[in-house]
Image (cartoon, rainbow, N blue to C red; front, side, top):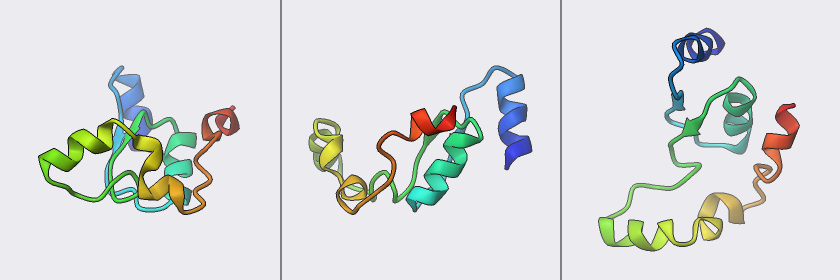
Length: 78
């Protein structure tokens, strides 16, 4: 995973990690330099009308309401 992220960065690409389900996985890929993540950790699949509502209030999503350690992870990267 580290090599794939480094390759993407060397090619000046934004790197997206797919299938992120836990705060530990999120912290790992962010520490390794991943720019974006997708997966159940961020949100479960949803219909488009729910997506509009979700986009308006990310802080209200399930991932952050269940004791996630994501808050402040960017400071921990340094």
